[in-house]
Structures are given as structure tokens and as C-alpha cells.
Length: 381
Image (cartoon, rainbow, N blue to C red):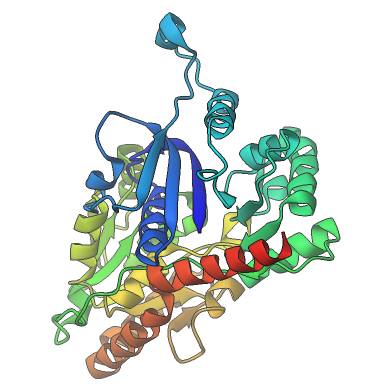
């Protein structure tokens, strides 16, 4: 079975969870016995897997494709997804019958539409991560709606990362076809990390980017309602985002430590020391459909989770699997953090439960779910 995985963006792509998902998914597909080619935009001649502390699989073919103009014109600052698509189509046309992929796997709506328009005669699997027509600027919504309708109608298989997204796509575009749901995943440590469960209030952590819809501002505001011996570590984000949060940090309450972007292995090492982890997403926008890597990584590192009470998170976590708080309510968030911190035995038990649950969401399990869809597709074609 041969899959061409398409990622028309730079690799490595520091600070972006989607790049981690691509690297980990491709590695897992190879480990599951699939022959994979990865088309991507190279940053340098370096193997992009090295940045993520991953060994490039032996059964993986790297296909670096530029988004720049050809020849001497490449010095111009122009970058275009259309140029990536053009080079991709040339590469596909050079394949022999025995080396052509059995399926193209794509998560970018514009690239999927270009491939469909080009009639590449290879089945296309589209992995949906959001409803683009609703989350795009108003000026682009109509055009993206047409693209989304085309891809959802014509792609041979559609995969969504959450049931909520699958339902919204089906309703919005009047789809009659089924949409497979395959959430994000995580690496699972061989053993649950050992933590300082005697003082969980000192080991509270958020890891990820600092966009408004992520709700980190609410976590910062919640610090005002917590005792001074509580410590919150915020890992990730750019200098501007950190400066914004620091400017809004309360004068009293819990101590907040801000760490800028860390590599994926460094972030995992930090999470291994965390007792209580926070998933503070606000309702609406991308949060309506998200399947965040951080949730599964919190679980795999044996952390207790305090989460916004959003439907997409309840697709993974049951009522007793997390401490749920009212999204957008810092006071309620602080109350739920305290409820865990004041009962270290309950908190440790919750971490144990989530570590066990995380095994259902390994990268290998995700790869096998994808390959099942490919197998179904091959039988249909």
C-alpha cells in the first residue's frame, strides 16, 4: 500500500502543532507497514524529522517541493501554493505505473481542490480540521464555501478530526456520504511519569500557542483567584503573545511563569513534571471542531486535566475523566484547579486514569484507522 502524504508548508515548522501531527502520522503509517512518500516544502537540505527528534523511517520517501519561482526568479520573495501544486503534478506525472501512489492524503482545502481539478486519476483522501467557510474572513467565505463543497463532494474519502466537525460539514453541505472520524493522537511513554503529587499546586501547566480562542487569557485571569503558593507554567507562544499576557497578569494570586516556544521533545519533558494541566479553550471559532494534540499529550504524561466544558472535549473525556469548568469563566476555572490541588490523591488517580485512556489514542492506532479507510477505498475503486 503506497500513500503520498501532502503538506504544502515548510518542514520543520516550529511552534505549530499541525507539523507535529504530520511528522508523527507519517512515521506511524510507515511503522504500520505502509510505504509513504511525504511531499513538503523544504527549509534546508536537513531531514525535517531530525528537528522533531524522530528518525526518518526507512520506508519513507521525502519529496521536497518548493513554493518559489523557478531558476533565478527564486530569489524573489514570491511564494505560492500554486507553484507547489504545479511541481507536485509534474512529480506525479513522472511516476511509473508501479511507483504511483494508491492514494493522496491531503489536509489543505486549496491543494485538494487543485488536485481534483487536475484529474490526477489517483484517489484523494481529504482530512478536515475545520469548517473553513465559517472561520475565514468574510471576504473569503463565499469562495471557500465553493471550494469546500467541491472537495467534500468529490474527494474519494473524507476524514474529520471530531464528530462535531463531521456533523457540521454534513449539515452545512448537505452531504449524503459518511465521514470517518479519526482524532489526533500522542506518543505514549512506556511508564507513567513520576511526579510530585504531594504539592500539585506547584505543578500546574498549560502548553501550546496563545491565540485568543485557546483561552489562555482566562487562565491568566484565574490566577487572581488562587492562593500565592500556587504556580502556573505557561509553555509556548511568541514574544508578542507572552508580553500581552504578562501585561494582563494579576498583581496577586498564583505565580505565573512564562516560557517561550520549546521544541516538541522539550515540551514533553516539561509535561512529564506537571500534575495539573489546563485546556481552557473558549467556545466558538476553531474550538468548536478542534482535536488538540495537547489534550492527548496531557493524558499520555499522566496529568490531571481541567478542561473547558466543550462538546469536542467530551468526545474524548467522560464526566469523571476531567475537572470541567464553564468556558470563559476564570473564577470557575480557579475553583476547579483548587478542587484538584486540595486533593492530591484524587488528582494522582485522575492522572493514572488518563494515562491508561491515552493508549487508545496512540499514533499507531491513528495510522491503523487511516489505513483501514485506505483499504476500504481500494476495494471501492
